[in-house]
Image 1 (spheres, rainbow, N blue to C red):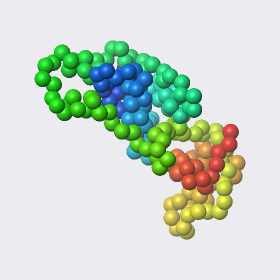
Image 2 (spheres, one colour):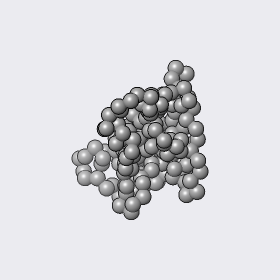
Image 3 (cartoon, rainbow, N blue to C red):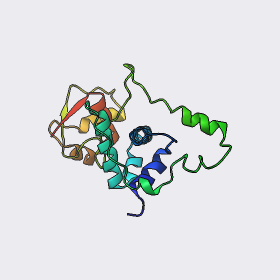
Image 4 (spheres, one colour):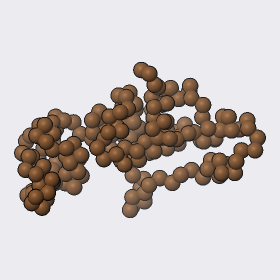
Length: 188
């Protein structure tokens, strides 16, 4: 592997460890920042560019963060080889006021309407669902005639696999959208 999981995820999330920040808080911040990057990318292009060990680590962390019993997050492989913010800054006298303020005030997480932090579901190597899952249509065509959504909806068949729908021309992002909007459901 050319790049460690830690260097790959930290480059993607653009997060550095703050002075006096414990490991679990730092890892949670890294996962949330990476999650924001993936949520901005609607087609999973960014997700598919990262290595499988990094994808697996993110999935383990997202599952742990979403769990009700809040188990500890798994360690970030390769982190010990990377310098953290503050290790050099503490030795440098006269650090800027902006850097000190940023260290003192951690960024706020995105909150949902009920005050809980948003956590995405774990993703598989190519999306949030397996290509082997079977599609169940939950009603009539929800799209206006003549739209791309209506064309893609016409390609769905009850009982077909996600992979069959994608092979028929339905974009993965559309399957994800229809699943989110509860136009379809998936079964193993």
